[in-house]
Image (cartoon, rainbow, N blue to C red; front, side, top):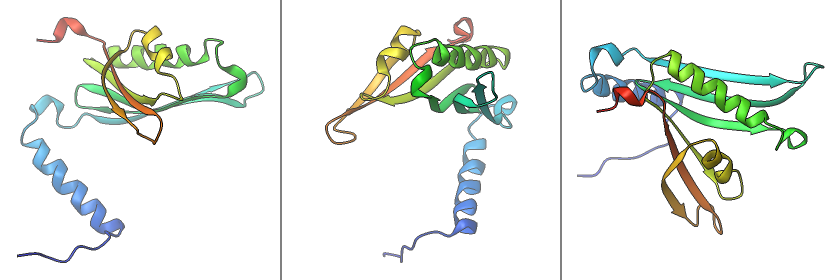
Length: 145
């Protein structure tokens, strides 16, 4: 039997998300169930202008960096590394095992490699003519089994 499919509205989207969270909670150790936190960092120049930032989520035992952006005038000057160092410090303080992130071939894969991240996957032609890379860096490796 098939059922009708429609685009979900905001309430339906939230219901679906809640149901998945409920399901996942049955399979996660108790001490990790409530570990979810948005971590948003901004770096500013002397005039208070945002010159870069990092948007991430702590989920269970890792941090996932969704966005790391640096204004073009401040690239190759350590600004991105400063942001990575800060999120790594936060990950360590919050007892995370690793950080994961993704980037495109036209963005900064070599930057992440230089900062100790290991590529664990790549998609070809995503977007067309480019690659989509996935990276991970162990933080509290002494805990990893």
